[in-house]
Structures are given as structure tokens and as C-alpha cells.
Length: 255
Image (cartoon, rainbow, N blue to C red):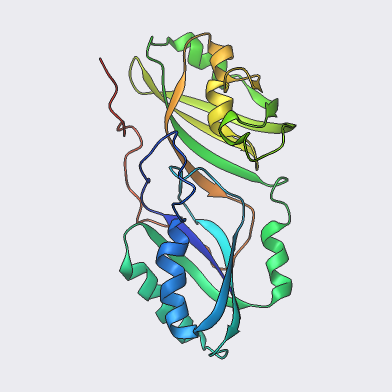
């Protein structure tokens, strides 16, 4: 039994810039146990399309994923039963919401991984410059398009990934001022782009980076995936449950 779905992250988990390898993803916490209570499989395999840091929400239509139930006791489920399972997961937590839960063949799973680095994703980032910025700085950002970015393996994961340099394309950039220190940044990028590193530079390991472009210190406070174009699911509609204002800082900024 293979279930495909999209999940919308409704909550930004705490712990910016800190990795906890013992902390399981929200999908596994709130989806697998409830689903398996009905299917009663001997084992489970979970796979999502792409990945983000733990503090990044996936809004809009959510992140596609599949769950393979190995040696299940119950193999025949109606779509009505599947819909009931989806409601059970959604009612159990406010942290994640499932959409379009359905049973598929194994051959359909390939669409999750195909095009992970060829398709595009749209992000909204809340950026901070402690020394402040001017209108001319944002004008420089708004002039950028089809930027070819060279990104080395981030320092944060270098202990478990080989050192490599990857080229990614940032298709469009739109900067919207909030106040003298904060601004919103909308980016449409090639999937696989390290957005945070593109903004602050990762100590010079990503070039070019936006800190270089505007010539002031720059960091990122919050990041959302707004549009995900890796998988085309039928009857996809815009999710309206997520209304948190990105302009509100989520961490304490010392004066």
C-alpha cells in the first residue's frame, strides 16, 4: 500500500540555526502513527519531495510525500476511508495539515523525485539588516534576475555531506521594504537552492550573495516555501488556513 499526499506546515518549529538529529519530522510525528492504526503495517517507509530546514514552513499546496506501508494487514481501502484518515490526522494537531491523501501504485512514486532540481520553488523571506538599508539597496535587488549562483556544501552539514560546489539559478527577486531594518524578499528559484546561504553568504561559501550585492550586513529571520511546483496533483486549490504575518519578527533582536 502506497499513499501519496501533500502536507502544509502550519507551525514554524523553534531552534533557528540549530540542528537536532534526534528530532523526527512533523510528518512522522502526526501522520504515520494515525494512518498505521488503521492499515496496521509491519513497517513503513516515508519519502518527501525535496527538503527544507526544520524552521521553514511549506505553505500553499504543501510538500508532496509518499508513505509505503510494508506487509499491511489491511490492503483494501475506499477513498472514503482514506478521506477519514486524512481528517483524523488534521484534527489531531495544528502543526501540519494533509491534503489530497490517496493510494497510488509504486510507479507513480517516481514523479516525486523526478525534476527535484529542475523545477522551481517560490519563497518568502523576512530579512534583517541590523545596520539598516536604503531604497537604493533594495533597488539593486529588484534589478536582479536569472542569477547563476555557486554554492558550496553548507558548513552546517559539511560533517555529513561531501564538499561540493553546486550551481543553481535564482530566476526572480522582489524586495519589499517594511521598516529601516526589515524587508520581505520574494524569490523564485531552481529547486535545490540554499536560500538562507544565498541571502547571508554562508561566510563567503555562496557567490554571489545578497549581502555582497547591497553592501550591508544581512541575515534571515524567517523563511516560507510559498509555491511548490514539483508535483502536479489534481484539484489543487490554494490553502487558506495559514494567515500568520511574516512581517512579525519571530526572534528577539537586541536593541
